[in-house]
Image (cartoon, rainbow, N blue to C red; front, side):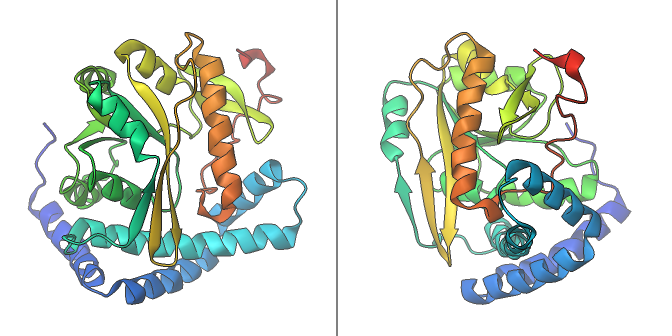
Length: 297
């Protein structure tokens, strides 16, 4: 069990939560407009993060010019602000009636549930983020994999909202808990698309450039008998699409690296659909293959 917050931490949490409650009470159109404004201002201030984003976009889209990259970054910060405001509503608002959305590919989940098979919803780090989990949880019992925040106050601020909707939050280090959930026929939401070094990793192309990549998703499927479904959420204005793609044939195949390469390819296709929705601020290319040739797997 996590260590309880002390008095100062509880007070800090109450103060930090108050403005989120206020934002959550706003009509969606106003909430999104506020989010766009805050996102634009944040984008002007976070210069180091903008630099990382520019470098990542230059590597992933070398054919594009600086004007295109600047437009993507500007749109990204606006979307980031909008989707953060939506997440605040999901955590602290009256969520009885979800925003307008439609589901594409629900049959892939329903088929697996009918046969009692565990399901891995393989997402990515896009701006909807937590709101994508909220939308999925309106239709199915979701167990969400997460990384605990180093700051206990921020961790509780976020997870207090998350726990309203999901069956359970599972620490990303709790592999046994994930496998138990999947073997019991549960639905696991996870995003394993950031830079990762460890036993379950390989250098795989991401937009043509090899970088450290987690191979945990096929391994989880192999160990639990679960099906892997690429899962994405898109937003246009205040409307959403939940997209569940068909499973890859013969995944897991027993070759976790090859299976992960297929999942990365699907992720790339979704990113190309709307580059500004992806979290380019993460240092995805911090360990390029050319810098560490001895680490080739």
